[in-house]
Image (cartoon, rainbow, N blue to C red; front, side, top):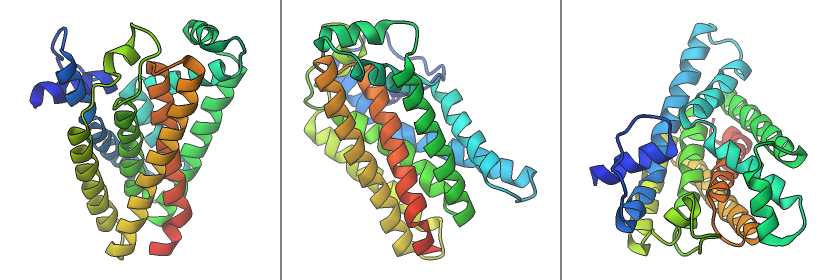
Length: 263
């Protein structure tokens, strides 16, 4: 269990977790099942950054603390999800089929589609998290968003075929067992519900809002997986990055738009 957790941490973050060399597919699948739990921890760290920034500012303003929280996520993950989003967006903007899309994704330069996608996602992330901070719901947004995007990425590794025989997509594709995925989903939903309930004076409504954000992350993330896999001809590491980015953004936005209902 701990070997899988270490592998998940080393894959999804820049932390030196000491992952095992040449893991088998069973261990890789178990590591991906840990992905949403790792996301919970990432969101918790980001929530701590936001609260520290707000305290340093004397509780005035929420835009800068939100931006610092999102920057903390980017730093902790090495911007891997944003890189995948940019490459996927660039691939969607070219013609020539999956082979050409994969060539474009491998290019070092980022095109207009990729830059635009990253800019829009970061803008929505900061704006939504700043809104939730003003509502006193930032912990819910960050924890649910980070967990939800990685929950969608886990399910993307369930039965989706890889685009090629090499790379991250081939490494993780079809490795997550149904039973492990269901357990991870139940645990993630329970933990997100607890965090959301504790983040408001109205626990039941708060938990419902948090779970709605988690559902939005899963739905949007899997929709992005479908689009990305169609472009690339299967699962790639870039598609997983796009799934994590867009799923997280969807959760932030849903929590922000519904946060006023539980204040």
